[in-house]
Image (cartoon, rainbow, N blue to C red; front, side, top):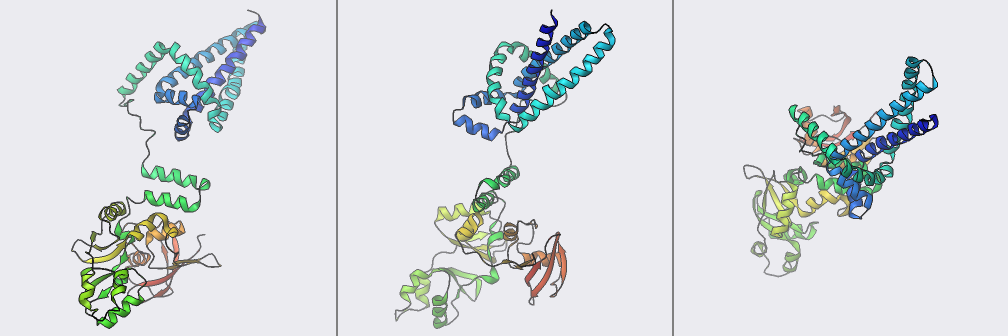
Length: 414
């Protein structure tokens, strides 16, 4: 065979080797979710690629079969060329092996695989058509190779029938959404993350604590009760006798405001307008409680502990705010950034809300509020001016009362 023809064959083998190496990387690095999207759009190359990747062992077996054949053939041709060009057979073969290794490494391995990693679709979709045809031609040989491989892997305890690489758990999905922040508005990005947190969040995490519940005590005078009703900023109030643990129902102010000006308006009139109280176990997930509110057509309930004592109050707005945040409620000034980069934070803020606003990583297990987290950490109520290192954050206590911390400063992270 003429030297020119041998050189032409060697060049062809190098090109084929580059094709097989690059196409293998491109097919394996294809974004599976974008691939599914393109399949829905009836992209012909994507359809072929998805069918091949449904059984990745087959296409890998085919690619490696072809690539190894091409590389070995190229090595043989290079040896023949070396013998033709040089009289010293041993040294010429060694030199050709070194040169061929360098050429194949650069032009047939690293370069095409790097390109395939950067732009996988550029080579994956055209090569899918080629491999679909080759797989039909060499199917018996590929089947034999894969059968032997499966038997070998089974001997070491690997079940090749279980392929869960396309399944995502919640944390992996959150990572994907976090990486997609640049392609969507920030508020929608927070909403998606909020939806994923619904299963892990409980009503205890978002409830209004017991000491902040505003209601109507029927033991007060009717004049005082009417004054409370007129000045209330809420549309629904719990009605109780002496203690919130003795609640008898919820009062919708829209109904009672019509009756207030009647001469015969009294406490019995209030009782007649009450709706049944809904009690919610504190361990109920936000997701389940949202479904309950929807099914029972209610908007408010009292959170109780294992002993039946009222621990707080939760509304449908609280549940929705866990997803959409400031889109439905006015943003409270619980976190205020200062000119020096520090933050003044209301210690009554929930840990979950703090993490959401500050992009923080305070632990959500245990204490539900920042005040509770500080008290658990210190095991006492710290004095004003105390500085602590709270789970990696430098915190200074600015205000406190007899039984809780009121205001803290988060110093800039260094």
